[in-house]
Picture (spheres, rainbow, N blue to C red):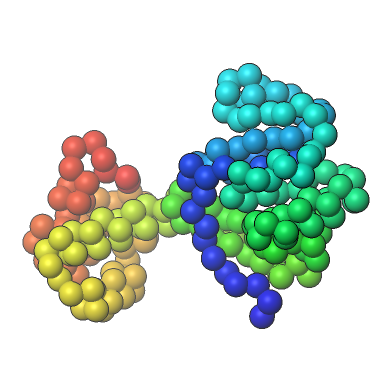
Length: 224
């Protein structure tokens, strides 16, 4: 296996996107969604990027790429249709040991971006190791239909249960059978049908008193 799977925290990290077209716009949106500080370098930009720059959501340098642009960047993405420029960006990044992705050119990247299915905090990444983006796209569409909002709610519920168990000084290793019991139950079906009584019944069976929805999510925080 060539690639090491990892989820990268880029919140408040400076990220550079070279290229202001449709591909660059998609890359910028994803970076912003993850909390990055994004700079775009391109003589032109899509209308979306122009509006983002006007709102100061991104920094846009309206000019050609310069090697020094990567100096302060934690992560670089090349999204131009100029092959020689993309290679130059990759070479510059390698010299400084920077994380660099060139769109649709896995052979000159030191990381590649998977296809993603996202339901709030649930993120499913699909990679074909650069062999077939079309196959990854097909799998993403299939998984997007398979996983819905109820899975995101289940994840929130599991997170709240785990947090409360840890606060009660339970040893983490004893949690495994509890969560396995919950996952084997009808909890997901009850979440899907928004059956609060059913959800609470399953939680009480697995965890006992103090783990009802209203205990885990007080006030108006109920994710159901």
